[in-house]
Length: 351
Ligand code: NAD
Ligand code: TYD
Picture 1: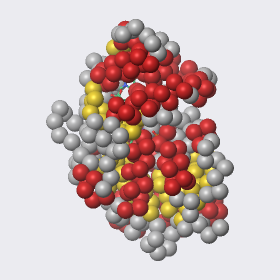
Picture 2: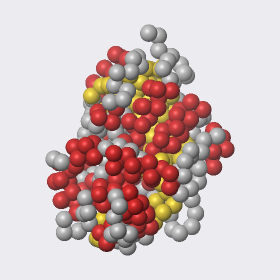
Picture 3: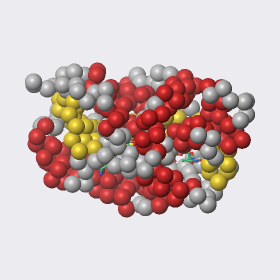
Picture 4: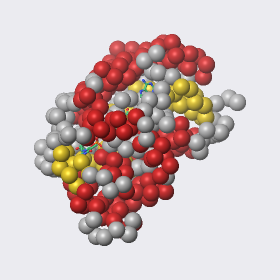
């Protein structure tokens, strides 16, 4: 088969990556999608069972830090484009141990950039780097992050992502590598590892475990449905301008405490519990070190220039998400056994 493009999606077995792989495999049968993933604790091939037999899909287990492995994949699959999502992605883990974040998020990204630079001739290629709004730092009560906001990362996670964004831009300016960057707000949806706020709270409510809200729960996040992020990446990859960054967000700000209360009400209803029962599980715990107060995205550029906007409301997306977790208990049970328990105890005991 003569594929129109051979697109390498790194981190495709993770939360956002698996939604993007599914979208690309199904929407573009003339592209071959090569999913490269190290399968860390956050990577799960069960996230991809519905595409694993598709003729235009291939999976490679590899570490982006391993230059030889990356080179082999570029050669074997004649990679024409990269959509780069592989990363260590959890702020709390980055506070416990930053070095893994430097290795994967910085060294791994530079490795991929080097291979793309050495391998590609001509201008019919795209290196799309998927990044976060956390590179801009923390907002006060007013204002939004635009593409012009100065980088001011504060956690080891956001520092590593900011560094990777700078390297991606450096390869554009220095070597002319055809890059694009997207900086997205907090995602939620199915297949989300239950270390992050929304899936952790859903799982704890279901099991009637304490709901650990950091500090006073006043921190604000802007939430976007993961499938809408995947469609934004598809849009930017195909229509975005080379050398540009695009902010992606839902104009959907929630304080953590309001969001947790909302989830409690939703689940009390679905699980036929007494009104207010799950809210009694809310426990305020020691705040995260250096906890960013507020993230909020101005998505005017992608909306005006590329015509993208979120497809569903937060209420609809959250209900779909809760339903998915209630219907997929085997998926959750499998990943919350074993090493997740050690992680949970280490992070939440005595907090
Ligand atoms: P995730 O932690 O769910 O998945 C990361 C994936 O990368 C996993 O499949 C993991 O196995 C893989 N991986 C990790 N290290 C690797 C390595 N060295 N080599 C190859 N594969 C490796 O993360 P996610 O939430 O899906 O985030 C994906 C990307 O999107 C990340 O780059 C993240 O910074 C960015 N992002 C995430 C959010 C969010 O809310 N989750 C928001 C904006 C941007
Ligand atoms: P998280 O999902 O880790 O995403 P990020 O830190 O990248 O925004 O956290 C979202 C918010 O929820 C953040 O303000 C921290 C808070 N939080 C809690 O209050 N309790 C928890 O157990 C977790 C995981 C997060």
